[in-house]
Length: 423
Image (cartoon, helix red, strand yellow):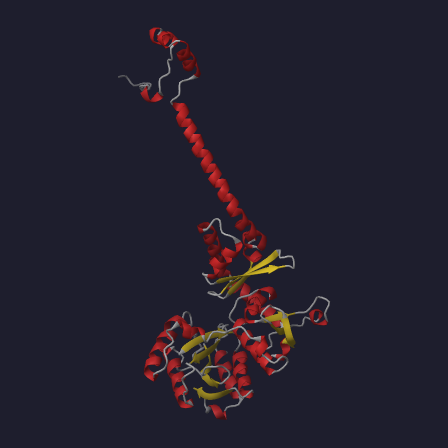
């Protein structure tokens, strides 16, 4: 079993997401824990108001919604009752057993899974701390549940990866039909609320990894002038394909106004993660001073930082964006500072090789200088040379015409007399 926990700012959004899946016939609400009625007797208003009313007890909790997905191996086929029991056990062990929560069974993927919707505010108005809940409480609960219920273990990294979001295959989607909208929606739900981007280009840097892009149109278009926004599919080469879908047509309304609100929030939340990206880049350049740009990109990938280069038709790089998948933070190069912009990185990569040559040349020049100084230190002075050439015997007989040079190492040091002190 693989457990994924996400927190957010909108209870409406996650409830509507699951309810719309139910309307499409690919999901069903199978349980409503700590509700006054059973799930099949609750209206959408009943489900939503129960969560909203309790969340309103503490308005200081901005990220008040909790969205959990429990994913099972494709070979497993669990009954509704077993899934409900697993959900209750999991929520109890991560500290949400007394919270109101809804459990939805989904049938829209290649593996069985359930979604659980809850809130972080308790009945007394206190806040449930979810800091590191995934690594601590969730991991412990997951392993215990796997043993108790005889579930397939998710320790193998290959098994974990099969539940991660993958790029959409535009060739397999029927353009203009529900599959296009559903595929784009799955990507938006993963990216919009998890990655910290502060502009549309930064958002598109992430979306393009999944063959999706946010499109405002040209500056002269009606959509752009009316602050409109559409989402569309891309093929494997990054070309736009299919029919664009207006942002307002999605139930979660990922419009330009919504994105602009996220830009402000994300700008603040990504600040603590700037240092990691900058330090990683600097460290790579220090360790490998003669590295090229493409090798730098590969080295950063090993640290979970993806580098997106923007080029014109002539192949000139005019922009760079860094996607830190570890912290889910996105930075345009200029947002990190001039040394990390497209021009700055190219200069640092291209100058490293020449700087190494300069250092080597200086080193060689220094060695040659030291060698020359050592040789001249033991050679006679010009006067000595001329005398010895004329008559060495004269020098030996006539010392006054000889050399009075004495190396300083052989000279006796003279003690300085201190004033006012008699010896």
